[in-house]
Image 1 (cartoon, protein in one colour):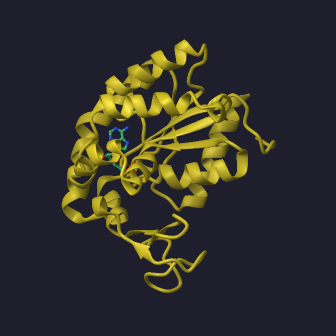
Image 2: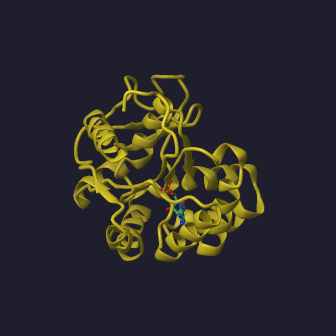
Length: 225
Ligand code: AMP
């Protein structure tokens, strides 16, 4: 993939919380002019804005549970209607249930387009727990740091913008174990769903982010030929 533009790239990134979907999506988006649609980020923005959806979603999120399908599906459908979503995008954190996957597929059928890729980032459970509990997000620029794998130079301070680093409420230990349970019960079945459609490709994510990214580009390159 030598070009810095990906055309007609409509991808879903699948993986447990902490698999690194957001980190990989952010790098791809920065380099390849693809829109990053992260449902987690959209919901956190709704909460920060104090919107009705934010108020409905906050309790579920803090407890590590999924926001109900009907709320999240209409949020994503509206996002995909925006003019900037006509070309290439990566969905990070959606779908998370079979009902969401089916709603996405009907929505895309209505636009006479379909998914081009579903990339699954497998990571062993014990590594996920360590990663999530070491994750810190910059309150200024949103950069993600990790005390295990990508520590900031100064504890609690973002290297990029010097903003203060905060732990997400749902990265606290009680919420982490609930999120992993929810992932296994509700999201993992999507692997078979997309495998059966011949769309699923795997990129081993139990490695340093730069090695994961290298393989992601290789996989996409192969698939786009
Ligand atoms: P994330 O940043 O993707 O880990 O999402 C954080 C939280 O937002 C999740 O634990 C859920 O509570 C909620 N959330 C994000 N995406 C979805 C989705 N597709 N379906 C239901 N809840 C979601």
